[in-house]
Length: 437
Image (cartoon, rainbow, N blue to C red; front, side, top):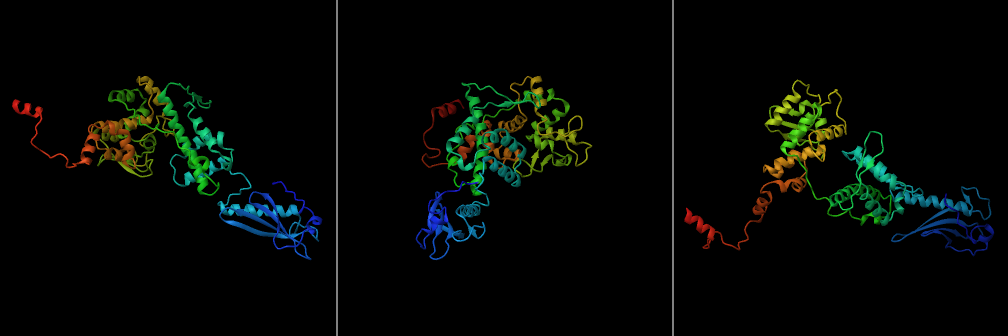
């Protein structure tokens, strides 16, 4: 509850009745831009009013009942100075709620409140990674920032949080249920530093999206604390790792049978782990040799064209299965869950002498990189992977495509007309070739 302000002129009826009657209230400031007033009326009891001043909008004044000059205060119609202040504060809170989308500014709106609202918004808007988003919120943002009222956030607070993320090594869990073990940071390891900053950028971007939503919903008056702070620069340089054909074969052969099926499917299609584990037998079109991915990360369906080897694999993988049966299950008949692939894949990497161990996503890179090195157009690779446009595909794989950059530049640049085609000048090399012929 807000502290009641004191005023020698307005506290008691005796002091108020000594004031000269006038139309303009006697104002007493409660806080910046907010005041309570007493209007003295000749021959009658006075009345209370409250005033809120907003730069650019001017004054807003509201009456709040009769002063207890001649009658005892009842808290409803006749108000004491303290009761008039309470009524004025309720009016101010109502104004604030109306202007800020219903938020009660008498209670601090914290970063934690904003995170809860953003997660709900994320799910409502069809966000595909709700589990991962909650993990980021609860493990990396809420413990540090959750209790801070957004209105009290400073630029230094947000920058300190962003910079601190880059100083936290990767977290590993050795056993289920045990605390995470942080990776040791190596001061002179530029690549490790780049990776940590790239991770910090992803987490900071999530926090910034949360705070921006709160600002758009008018639950905070300014975005100055975070609006001018940019992510770390020059840290998202693509460093695509992919397996050679020999490594891919060794890895598949080192896997247990159920994991080998998933690894093989990924290497032959470029599909994500989640897409493969949700795939039904009917998603394989035997006649056309394609896979139907009903819903990819972008939220859109796509068809993956299979090469002959992929076609043979999926014919065997779906043979005899009901149309709605999952194409891939664990050896004990259970479905593959979100992180079930991590441990088996690491074990297979050790057995196949692949170091450092690769994640399942590297299998997707291996597929795309193989197509790029074979000269497949970027648009075709993007369609196979389900990228929304060519930017991601080109950024990661264009440098692997023989002649892609050269062919693109030559086709787009054309001729400026500065040098005539043909001409009378022949190179020495051309002359030698003509003599040899």
